[in-house]
Length: 483
Figure 1: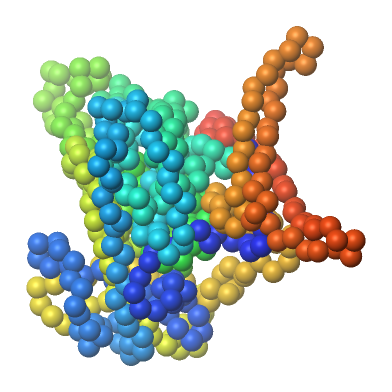
Figure 2 (figure 1 turned 90 degrees about the horizontal axis):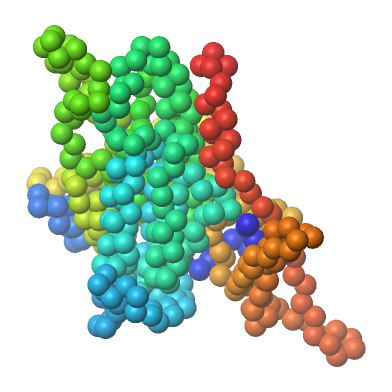
């Protein structure tokens, strides 16, 4: 069930980094007729952040042409303080956790959405991911962090809102389970039907449909993130995503990737990707049907396995590269990869330039950020579509539009605090049913005095129920590729 309430203001406003310098509004990546802003992370040879550069040390190119830097700043996003001594450790998981303090927007240091691709992970990978998520919550989440743990196959109504409450994060981790209806199987490799030619076309189509489903879930999360101020990050944990099929580019997946990366760049969201398969051996399993009497057949199958593995990493590498993030792979430490993604967000440079009128032709424009100093590395977003933000996503103005925007967002605005308690019941006459109790904190409402002396506040409340979106994607896979 999703609940949307319109309070004194619309749109998420409960999160954003606390940074010295310009206001948070100036830290949001913008693409307007007057300004194009791009963020960049600079590191030295050891991967340590470099924070003392000036505008003269950078160059910006759009479609190969140099642009004059008209605005420049360094935005520092340091992590919050370490967890207080005495907090429950993994060995003391049953100890009660103190309720988290309610953070003000200026106190939020990092906003992180960890997206578990249960539509595309094997049973083996999911088991490792669950353990890594528990370590991540225990060791990496700091008091100044807003964190959400989201499953791509959970549907709109099951998205976990951003929270500072470890108890809610532990509950979200418990809901992370292998999805037998997804494209992931028991094992990431070594399935007996991998080399069945009769199933190749159906399997390709199935992979494409579920990959687009994963990207659709990411699109939904980033759409909710874009109205939050400052730098945000999404960490996608998956078994991979192919861009190419047996006939070349998969237009279905490629188009979805381009739309997603453009949305992420406009929302100032950096995407980090983690290959949940770790460091695989890529060896042939005993259950696989391979003619052991033919060494050539074994060698060919081994080559196919390696090609399949590297091809499946194309989508993850693309998402990270196009949004200025990092792709973590060939490592069995998923929790360590999540930690490295957080460490990468200590600060960034924000550079802006004035675009020409020809920029807004609805074509894709390539951006390059270069450094004049040798020995340093820079990562930034690689481009954008030539559409101004006001045209790409008009701001909701009417009350109905604001309610619709709040309803489709997986995140709370923070303007009105809600609490929902759902009670399950069963009676011989009515059968099974649920009773939902909605608590609204009236201190957050704006009351207006009436002529008779009474105080009145007007509140619009919308409630919807949503079926799991994975069911729709599963039904789609039952069609033939020609459909």
